Image (cartoon, rainbow, N blue to C red; front, side):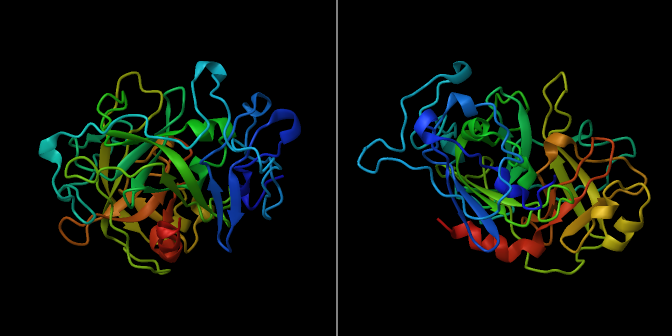
Length: 364
């Protein structure tokens, strides 16, 4: 059975008396599920559990019972599941910031990036093999990495501690996987040799109305365990658009970004493609669009005419950005539905969620 409120699958029940596992602290607002990852514990019996579908009740999930007089109630001894050393206290940065002194300049308020490309993508290009961006050109782009080193989603910096991405990036992770996800900041090549900063996830805000069957409300915010250094050419935030539920930006040029196919044999550079935003009406009636049935007033579509310039599976969560004024790249879409690199996808319409973003951009 498909659970409408799929975001609550980021949990699983356990028996603390037998496993001594501690779930993340979980709470709910009227429009979000909040998962506090800091202090999450580990139980071998739950290591391989997939969180998707484990919880069907969207109500508040209580904390497991514990002895309040035991000073280490929410910490466990360091263990090595599958050879990976992880300390179950508050996550800390995995690496020192590799930022050269010459780069310690004031970062733009938001929206740093190149000029709008003059032409759109060639008809045989897509992000899995298209136009390479310049290193450092899109400093708000981040990638998410699993413990095995594989990249599985992208996102956009919206503050020095928060990343905007798709809810589906997180919904099927196990507790173990969630606690070991690394946020890669300032990465250009998929071999990860040029990553500027790394962080862990401290907290997650997922839209409570996210539906995994229709991709409705496919939006989430992750809070990193430490601020990143916002510096020119290293990392900066993307601008947020004004709130709107209208079918805005039709016929405007936009840029889609990503690292392309996950199975590429050689390291991939961050790639970009110039596209055009089309109306939801055209998106629904386009017979070639697999996602046409999911188009709503909270989604946005892009096109490059007869081109096949699309995003790939690992590009889910990444941005669709426009340039309303020089130096102010603004995110209007989040890559959501993507069947494969050869199919057009569907984007979450960011302006429709501006009030939601603002609420959880500052919430502790």
